[in-house]
Image (cartoon, rainbow, N blue to C red; front, side, top):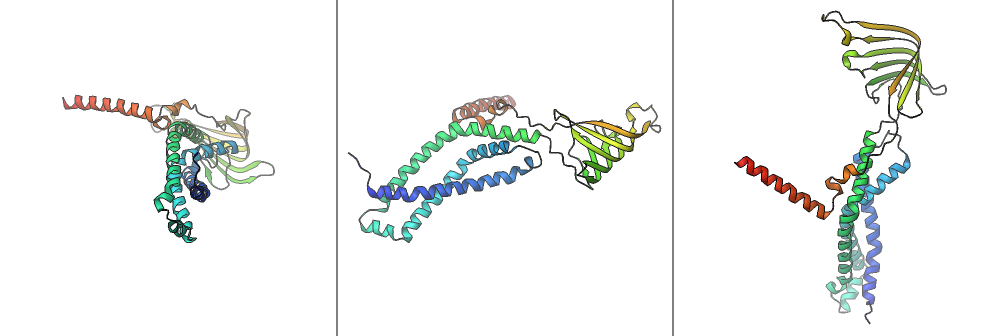
Length: 292
């Protein structure tokens, strides 16, 4: 009956802890690189922590092929460096064991990891990439979280620019407001100025209700003008209270995974080869047509 030699067990026990440590460190580094690249898509959207954790999980799975080779390299260097520093390699060679013979269990282990990594990238990775990119595109389409600052124009509401001089957070009142409504086009812009106002979201989180007090509005009616370019009608209104209904979808709407399944990120090796053959056939046909 075959029994593994004590040396083989010692080499594997020396390699595995270092390998797992370097793997998680490398995975953390590439995941931070992903975070810094797409942090603008996540910040200020009011996303739930469960959605962010789900995105980070799929991103971590996607980054495994980047972290795995580097972690194997670093773990191998650190393992044999530690063995050499503790003179254990010297003892192994003094016992008549060659370096290649001592490395045999690690070569077998890394070969098994390589085979498993291929099946992982072929079967698991496409599904994780479909989930990750679907979540990322869903985050891009979500409206930003509504937090109007003081003293600057806020342009994160599509078609509107809002200016608030100061905010009374205890009473939820904004003072000295100025609203540029360009939802009907720049030529038909409406300017509203108010002494104060309140802002709230509808129950379905698809509209904003802006209640304004003590102000006036100026609306350019260029769409109703006559043939003369000099006479452009406008409307001026003074109000004590006015409500504006602004479209603003604050819900997180997850896209269908099927939109990304047909892309290259959602295909395995066989499907990619089939797509490449089909594209080569199309390219050859177009080249033949152009040559004639």
